[in-house]
Length: 272
Image (cartoon, rainbow, N blue to C red):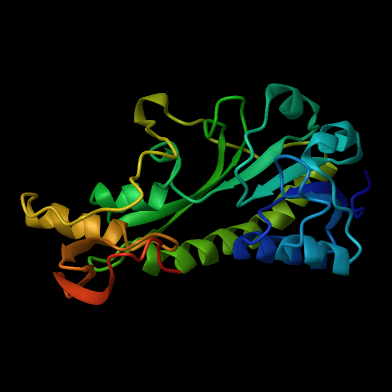
């Protein structure tokens, strides 16, 4: 590879994830990279799906591949970038990715491996939330860290209020990383990393956060506030009380739990 030739990459994202779309659009516009394929991972929905990521790829002439076909095309790329994608890469895949798989994890590693990292950071009383860029390893979220950056969590911040800030940080990190990643790839190298400290690792499964939380008056007030903030989460029902035939939704403002709205008790979904 010459010092100026574009680095060939495969891109993993989610069909309707705004951050995935932002990452793909940035990489498409960056002369340092050539996007060899785009996939949304899992099954065979990448080529037939109509998500925003697939539509963007088609509109700009980018090749869409279904996940089962990707491994056979890895010889065509220098490295793989997983940007807001939940695919777990098997050892066979990682071994074929010449310069590795770089993953964006929307939480600090190794303390928040797995799922719902932002919600658990709030539940644990953290005053900052992180985004980690790392190389994937066979063990999930355990690969060496390229970069870890933080933003503050305020006393009233919820998952909802932090969501966009985490996306902005992740995108900024990608923009900052891109020139160094390309330069290293042209030399046939990976970027310098820091190994994760195993004694600091914590794992949270997809089921580690209940679907919803009904206010518990027996909890200490600080923990009540944390639960209310953690369950102000896009796509989920907010923390609530049940009163008669209604859900009384709760939020935290000025350090106090207050009512944010009321919905009928037969409302069975979360809020966007």
